[in-house]
Length: 215
Image 1 (tube, rainbow, N blue to C red):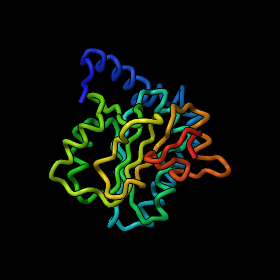
Image 2: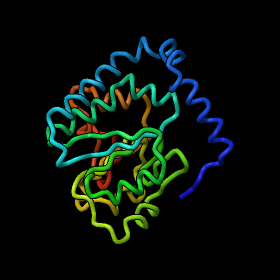
Image 3: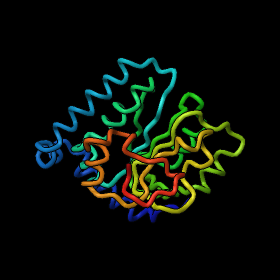
């Protein structure tokens, strides 16, 4: 695992806290355009918890810079995740400002058979709060642990080549979903809300050789 420079992290988190965790600043700058997405997230997550029974659960680990986190709120990404997997009877829980230890603990937690990571990353990596986690790290952490029966989903940028981050995590490698190229705001919007792409179905199995845009 590649850890971040702590001084840079502190500056980054100060910016994050000022913009995202200060209610006055957040409300003034972001609320007008974020409110529809925020309400959608709240509705879908509440609906997910109301209609599932917790027997099959997914945990979503989130760490992002303020702008990208705001984009996720505006697009209703968390709600789209909850909506997409509710049909499978899976309950969704979220962990924000997630660290590498949160992912390591999640891999060992048999109550959660589905793993979702959000933020910056690629096919073989995810940027946690304290550093970048790679496929090799997860392989080491999974040593001696049973593989998950559910999904490993990455809402990060992707690459066409490389060993997927969840390669050693799940039993069924076709359930490793993500993007196969870098994505921008338009790509994320289309994958979640396009006419033919809905939620995680807008992602692809990143074990496949895919050179086209996600979907």
